[in-house]
Image (cartoon, rainbow, N blue to C red):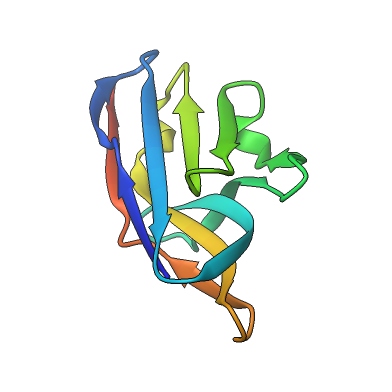
Length: 119
């Protein structure tokens, strides 16, 4: 299972960005999908997660500003980020709990996409 993120970039504080993550592979199924971010000197932190039944959870610092969504038919997840702040700067990673048919459930990670928010 491969995860590929897109949509990162440079934006001014108060602006918006939309990240996308597409899962691909042969004969696989996906459970939850999530976004994490990593900033220098900090541990990777959960930004948002969406389950197979559409339930969502967000990190405290992004509640009310970020929205995670999912297209189950296309095996994609999006992260709409509004009212961006400089502290949102970091590398954003897509993660999915998935398995190839007949295999074990495993965590898969994308390569990450850089988000930079300027003052």
